[in-house]
Every structure is written in C-alpha cells, then in structure tokens.
Length: 416
Image (cartoon, rainbow, N blue to C red; front, top):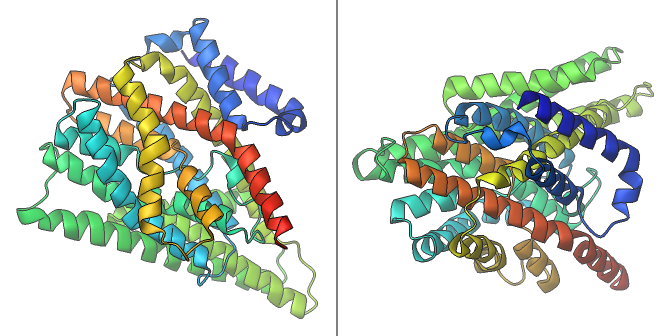
C-alpha cells in the first residue's frame, strides 16, 4: 500500500505543479481532479483495496488530525478581518445554531433513508456536520485583505465548526453507550460543550497573542526572524499540547491561535513601519508557508477520499442520503438561522449552498471507528460518510467556479 500511495501522491503533486495555471482555467475545482485521480488509480488496481477502514482507523485518525491542525492554523492566519465584522456573526451562527439545525435534519434523514437507529443516525449526522476549511478554494478567502462577505463567512465557519462538532459526536457516542454523559447529560454539557469549546477559544487567543507578542518584541529589537517553518509548526505544536493538557478543543485552540498570531505580527509590522525600521512581513511569510502546507493537505486527503470510494456500498439509500445532505439539509439549516437582513439574499443563498465536507468529517469518522462500534454499523457508517464527502466535493467542485464568477460579476455590477 505504501509504495502505491507514494507513486500516486508523487505523480499527482508533480502533475498539478506543472499544470496549475491550466487547471485554474477549468470550470471545476482542483479537489475534484484529485478525487477522480484517487478513484481512477484505485479502480485500476492498487494495494489500497486491501485496506480495512475499521482496522486502520487509528492510522487514519492520526493522519487526519495532523492535516486538520495544519489547515486550521492556516485558515486562522488568513482571516485578517476585524473581530466586529459581520462575517463573524454569520460564521458563529453557522457553527452553532446552524450546525444544530443541520444535525437535526440529517438525523431524520439517517433514520428515514439509511434505516439507522436514532443514536446511530445522530452519530452519522454529527460526523458530517463540519465543513472543510481548505477544500473548494474558490469560495475561501485568499488574502487577509479580502472583505467579501460570502468568502469570509464560509472560511470562518470552516475554521470554527471542526471544533464545535465535537460535542455532537460525543453526545451520539454517549447515547450509543460509548461515552459517559453523566446524570441528565450534566457531564457532557459541562465537559464536552462548555469546557471544551469555551476553553479552546480562550486558550487559542491567549497563546496566539502571547507568542505573537514575543515575536513582536524580537522584531522591534531589529531581529528579522528566519525559519518561518519552525515558528509556524512550533506554534501549532505548543497550542496543541496545551489544549490536550487542559482537555479543551485542540481544533478551536489552533484555529484561534492562528488568527491571534496574525494580528499580533501585523501590529509589529505596522509599528516598525511607523518607526522607519525595515523588515520583511513575517505574517505574509507565515501565510505563504501555510498555503503550501494546505495544498499538500488538500492533495493527500482528497486522493485518499477518491481511493476510499472502494469502501462505498452503492445502495440507493446511501446515494439518496448524500444528495439530500447536500441539496436540502445544508441549505435549510443555513436559511433557518441566517435570517434575511443578515446577508443580502443572493449571498445568503450562496452560503447555504457551499457547505463542502472534507477532512473534518474524515477525522470524526476515524474517531468513531476507534470506538467499539458494532461491525455492520461501522461499515455502513464508512460507506455513508465517504459517499457524502465525495458527493460534496463533486457538487461543490463543479459549481464553485461558475457561481463565484457570477457572484463577483454581480457585485461589480452593483458597484461592489
């Protein structure tokens, strides 16, 4: 398997590096190409078909967690918008009430279409609740100066909901008898919701600001810092370790740390410019490294999803669930909480449509598979999740470029 995987990843990386400009002209996302490449390579016959997703769950859990941490930190650094920007309000609604509405509707669909019990359907819905902070780059912000409300809302949502999905997953596992909820759910509410989510947000802000202040101090003393990679990965490792020690959300902590670090490094740059001190922009260098890491994560994870299509049980109920999740559940969940007036109608509809699933769902799927789930249920969970993620990549990958081009043209026609 390792040899086949290295050959596949290496070939796709080289090909996309050489043909990137040509691919950008196509009316589809790069993720869709990676998905098709992974599927085609496995269909032609590789050792990947011999992999058992349940047996390899621990390996998958580690890989997806690393990928997600790198992606979330990069996403946080790209979000240069002020904390009072309305996109944060939209993102907070989507990552909380919007996620709850989406999970509720998806749970009903899981019971009605997939024939799952209520707890199993809730686990499936919770795994598929988070949207991806990296995939569908056409709808993500590309620079901190980007102030497009649709892009900013979707990017911030993707950064937040990988962490806010955790309580829902733990609730579902608790209802399956695999996690302690406490009397009337008290332990779940205090530990998995309030402490994990609130503590993750607070810890990320404290660490990001503290490390950013240390960098600012060094820059003001005339030290033009190098080794951007060490700084970038060091902040992630420190934040992740502290979050694990305090048992708070590692994903929220790393995401917020990236956001806070960016603003601290920008303050340092602005202060040095006012003092006529010459220095390269550390924040830009860190973001450039993060973007490269994000591209590697995107290629590797989507190739894996394409290859994982061999695990799908091609039943009409599974396909109907995936389509319903994309075309009905996500839009209804968003439109229910993002009220008219929060965003213009056209932007509200775009946000409702673009809820691409990806690495976050893979992580929570792997986490669930490391629990002692019943065998047939575990394999049905794998099938439904992989098919839903792949369908999302296809649907959003095909529609992203034309819809966002229409959005930009409409903004221009209305004077921005």
